Image (cartoon, rainbow, N blue to C red):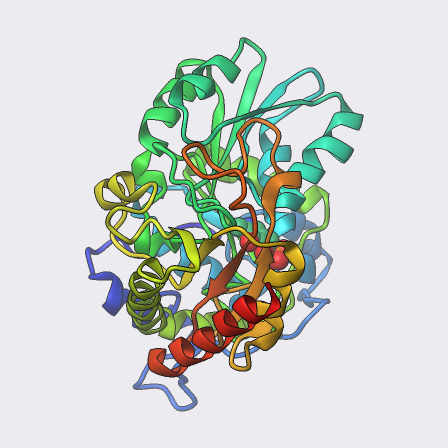
Length: 413
Ligand SMILES: Cc1ncc(COP(=O)(O)O)c(C=O)c1O
């Protein structure tokens, strides 16, 4: 969906206004006007006559009724709202919605690569992004080269004449390495490559991706934007040129999200700023406390001064979130699992960014090929860790829960 109003509202205010076009909600002086665009359920849109039916497909424009696969006001409102948080998308820019974050990553990559091209991917990318490249894009003749996310020279060396796309993820959602996105984008553009960023961790509230040189900013809306662990969706936001390609690809591949899901995600968006503020503050407090614990070898939380990636984070980001990781001092996988199993307030499960806290074991060695694990400078015995997604609970309760977990870890040794 193409871009909406461009007036300079602060993000906090925009969260309350975004996507609420009067033609979708009605206006206060009309009976039946509503605050949120209603859930507009339709597969078929009816035409007045055959002339109008024939005219429909010729006018493939945003915001024009055609057939359910091209959406209706509920989906258009969400897409437009997301575009409003990336003003650098400019005129003609917009957001495509996908049924999951992985589908959005696929849509972005497919918009940019053809057989014979090279995709350059950060080594800390979400594992299914790696699997997509290795097991699937390879079958279509697209080669992928991975690089150490903390090594700009390795990134430069991975680029070549055939590089048509670059996939960054900053911070990486497991090991949290921050990449120098503006510098990498400039190098990639010299080669004519499209720069795709998985911006799920920061969202545009924390990192204005397009303003930092990214061509396509992808998010798993399943995480912070949905925010309630009950809906799956993805988005890709871009300026006019890449938005046109994303849109064509999504239409050809039949990508569509349900209006019910779009309404849930739009509802989540309204409170995302407050949730992120709270989760960030709690995560920072817990990360600081964990840093001082003797059981912890390293806290991986770029928001924390002294943690890897903090300098780049402080330079480029305006916000954070509740997701961070830590590595235990020595021990085995079984001992680490005893810690995870002892936690009562942290649910054990995939995903993150919901209102409730989650924990997953962190054992990333198998999911990287171009960078070492344990990280450089770490004791090789320090391999096992956990990833925490901090929710809206009282951080004091979460700290008490983690103390219980650390005691179980020590007892299991
Ligand atoms: C960084 C990151 N990107 C993308 C995704 C995929 O999102 P989805 O689960 O909505 O497909 C995830 C899911 O965990 C993720 O962590």
